[in-house]
Image 1 (cartoon, rainbow, N blue to C red):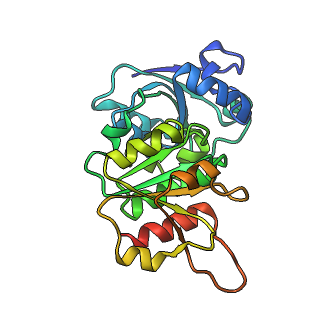
Image 2: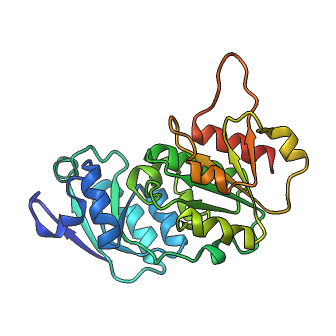
Length: 267
């Protein structure tokens, strides 16, 4: 790595880090530019361990030793921009409490068949637009034994900064990729031997404990967004509808909590 001290907020070398609070801007720039932002030494370390490569690192001086350790072993020469806390906040639009950010090269998308090869339990996230819920679902998937995560074409980006942070970097641990539309994805997953189980409220739904007692060899759990729930296309392609029995007048759980309960039952 090579270290460069920067003292001006409008320095062109900091272009990747500007205005990270503007979600609409990041949705445009991250996929098109092939970049995502990793925040904190722990997340950067997990990204590097997963084979991802930084384009640059933005760090405050007191965390520079952590960056040296992370980049010393097997990462090619990377520019490390050392800035003050005030300058970091001025550039990014928020207080960088965790000390460092890294602009990471986004890896090429993986084929669905490659991601689920050998998998017994897969989590599918359909059109979940809240980055916090996506990150929490990945963390649950990693901790509760999902072999892979698949996300719908319109699902929020798992590599968005907030998703990565909430997941504690487990988005780099669990294999994942995007599905095509259901008309293609449904038959493809069934051809690969998966039973598609949609978690939803329905009169014909099977209670989760009953489904888990006779779980298929390969199962893909389909989770929908809060409020709207699963789309009609997702429900149409599903082999069965499963529900989590609830009490206390509550009809459902947050999607990340529901996916964690379902994965625990199917472990």
